[in-house]
Length: 93
Image (tube, rainbow, N blue to C red; front, top):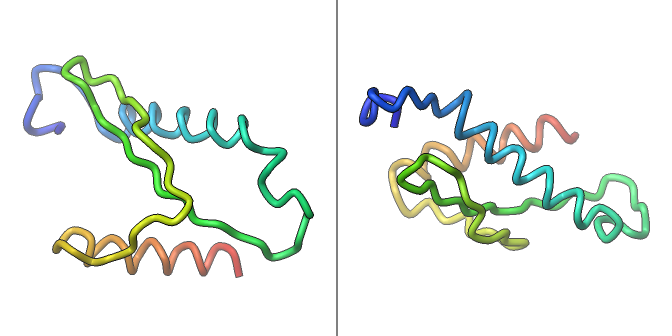
């Protein structure tokens, strides 16, 4: 998007990613008491967040999936999914 809309001065990392992180934090805060209610050790869950960006470059949350699809159905997903899962496992060992 940085290259496609340079006149908008939108930086994906600094603008859109921050909006997404804020939306994720808000949703996690809203359900924090329901997550790991039994306080089990070494309990993790992977969520899938779906966003859309409108013509004004505002980020909107579409849905949160508690069982996200991890199918490598495109070249981009074939590159991203193994790295994401690997990073998750390394961080939470």
